[in-house]
Image 1 (cartoon, rainbow, N blue to C red):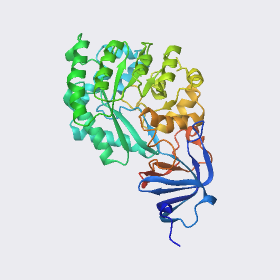
Image 2 (image 1 turned 180 degrees about the horizontal axis):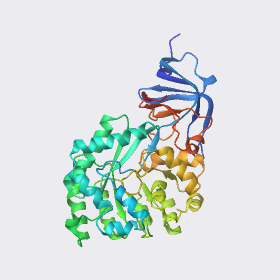
Image 3 (image 1 turned 60 degrees about the vertical axis):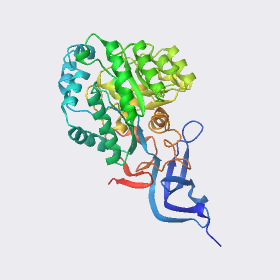
Image 4 (image 1 turned 90 degrees about the vertical axis):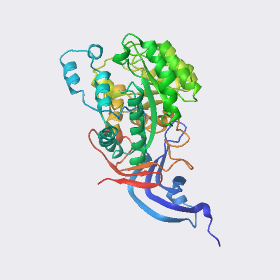
Length: 413
């Protein structure tokens, strides 16, 4: 009798428990499960005792009773940068505020100067070390923003480095143009003229070079106004690019409602989010990305309105916000723990926030973020008794194996 080719697989993983993240509440489990891969995608999954008769697999893997989850997704990072801002960390501990540091030439502009001065190869080398830490914790998809160049040449350099990371490392990289991150010194007092440069020169050129997957902005008193942000979003929309926004981190500027009007992928930070903004996000399907690393590092005291987001049915993602000034963190597992301890997410919500909802925040929900047939075979194997341990264990990395596109890319101890 001929073998059913639909049951001919490249690899088969058995003796695993599956946290599929595909249930009606954003979470699903299969105890003593199995998962098959063909051509880099999930071909079958379910209870091991329901494996199809006559199946064939070129490679077989014994999961030894570990848990298998979708590959983790870090959906908000500024991981490509040069220099350090440990001096500002010290200044804040001595009483200076983030805004005070920024207004005297520190903050984002400190990193801009260092990043402008770095060569592309030096920038890549510095960034790869940070990325490697994330990959060792099961990350298979990574968003990388520009925004430390604030001129065309350096923004291009940053985005080229981001693309090279995706070519060099076993990780899918989504690039985000963040030219409207801060006002460069050469445009001091001329924010509208700088936004002209962003919209008319920088973004079209970088998009034409295939370097931009999405567009972001910093809508804040020390950043750009809602009107200026809307101009950036209009330019993005004219190029067919999705938008997202740094919104309501330090004050309520109405940025969340603005990005929702553009059907934005996500609104990120959200400590000062209003009920009006929540309603707009819920209607637009915009994801709330929580960044507990920045909340912790800046010693913020105002919590994002998690319960209200839950009540409105807004998807909640969690990310490291890896950046040199406010969240120099390269551990998504630690971000999950912080989201639980600081923001009172449940461990299940934290896991959904770094898989299913993080994928939606990048517009990749049809490709990754859950274990489902035909999605990419991006997953991680964890030596844990239950999935809650991923958010529970501070400083522990129980990742035993990472599979990216069906290929084993990393094995832990």
